[in-house]
Image (tube, rainbow, N blue to C red):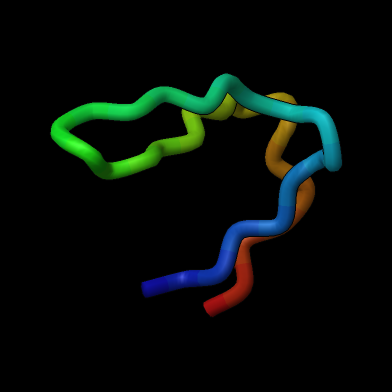
Length: 34
């Protein structure tokens, strides 16, 4: 998996089946490191 760098206050946290996810818009992503 790649590492995604995003803005500090970006995205929306959601919890589905006891797993936490962060949903980001494309403009909040600063870099993707392979």
